[in-house]
Picture 1: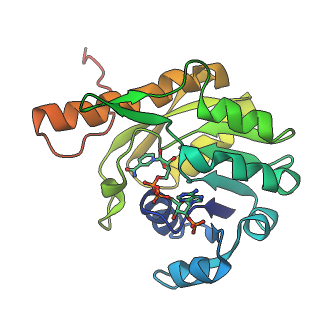
Picture 2: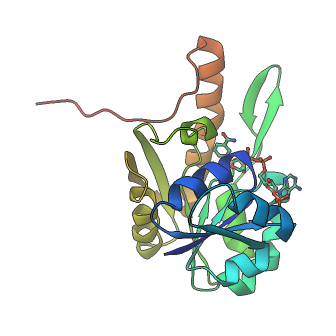
Picture 3: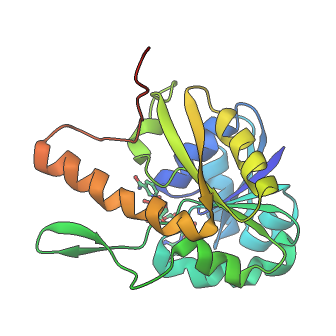
Length: 208
Ligand SMILES: NC(=O)c1ccc[n+]([C@@H]2O[C@H](COP(=O)([O-])OP(=O)(O)OC[C@H]3O[C@@H](n4cnc5c(N)ncnc54)[C@H](OP(=O)(O)O)[C@@H]3O)[C@@H](O)[C@H]2O)c1
């Protein structure tokens, strides 16, 4: 697949891009094409471009920008028509030393879907800390995928499975993206309050 990672110059997008580039052709998208090119030189299998060009040249678009920058994705609406769009965006705020989910209603993924008519939006990687991508192997984790359609889920699951040890789990339609995104502040607070080091989601099955 050709996978564009918009915001792939950042910590999370860069990690996802580096691991996806082992299996796919990755195009790092940046507001500054020069910055995208420099970021893409850091590993094999990637090149850089502006947001619109990266989206236009890809089969799948991964959105890895901060929630505050989500509005800029409206600029790529034309380029993502008919394509899978993966959102890892978490709207968070700090309140009395704890992270909280910052939206009164809905989710970043649903806001993205409203901006991208004809796109197929799914969540993935929201609850995985960027540090999990630092090494050569990503530690085993479950990746919660809420999706706009069964087709969007299947395609997003294939992208997730292309990184060894990540297991996609269907979390329901995109209306469930809010629940998926809300897990992130919980996980970050748990790590901080219990001094565990970075935590990610992994569900266990009762044996027997
Ligand atoms: N960090 C994590 O552990 C983690 C884990 C799971 C999910 N996420 C989610 O992943 C997304 C990216 O997180 P991150 O920590 O990688 O963020 P980041 O490094 O702060 O930003 C990622 C990229 O977004 C682009 N961007 C576009 N508009 C921007 C703006 N107005 N202000 C700042 N950056 C802008 C920048 O790329 P250009 O300037 O090159 O365009 C930047 O390199 C967020 O939505 C976050 O909720 C993060």
